[in-house]
Image 1 (cartoon, rainbow, N blue to C red):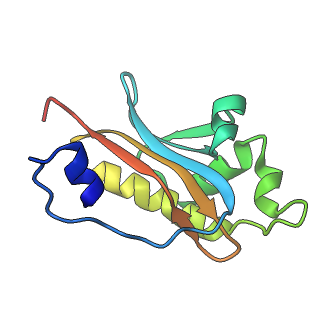
Image 2: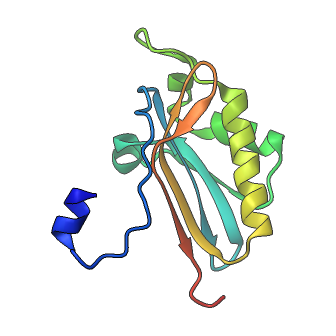
Length: 141
């Protein structure tokens, strides 16, 4: 709060959110964009710097089901990284599949969203944690 007040003494600060630091895991990206031809599409791939360097992602038109989520995870070139490597734990693929389906359901039920970016999502052997997320709303709604 002190830092915020130093930056802008007239800022209307209603509170702060303090959360525990997530332990590192396999970095995943999940998100959604609105394609001009197809409408909302969900994305899955390796996150963090991997998405910037390798651009190894898979897309599906909303809505998706579990089988679509399974296929998306199988389509990326880095799929072997989800199985664990060099002492790193394997990713909980079932949790990631459920997250993709829930993302699709959320997007399908919320037409005012233009874009969602969850990067990174840390995947663990049990569960996953969204470490950073951004949602852009449509200016037309």
